[in-house]
Image (cartoon, rainbow, N blue to C red):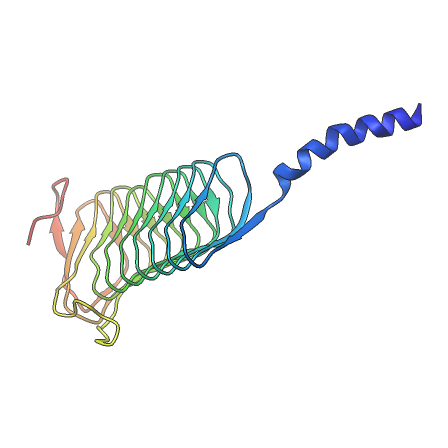
Length: 220
């Protein structure tokens, strides 16, 4: 009787084991597609994009030459590329930084980013997103969109022309309706800063805020 009970227990437990395992995927050339219903470790490639389906759980997501798309309700740690865009879907939780050099970042509604957002040459856009870290860029526009909360600050760095591709352009920084930036806003280069009348921001250095009360910021 005890032997039958043990065999029955093993039959119930063993089929569940593969679903609990995490698998690393590493490539040099080629894209990666993390499909739904699985748990992954690190996803890494050099030349290729990465797509993470809705609800997938992963560790680090990294590429060099390629864009990354993270589906709704996914869970991950850091997300980074060098040459490519990063798009984070709705209700995503990222426990680390979201970074690119030559590309933009977009974070959709309900997502939570525990780390920082950083680009050199690329815009950053948030919609109803909570960011617990900072936003850093050199040449990118920044939009802290409607209802977004940035617990850290914003910094637009002075261009280093060894890294910067578009150093002569003046970035636009927009703090939208009912958005907030708890930390300081530091501008080491000339920018155009628009702050909605319903938004809340920390101290500003290096720019003069321009108030607006329409749904979208004025065009320069």
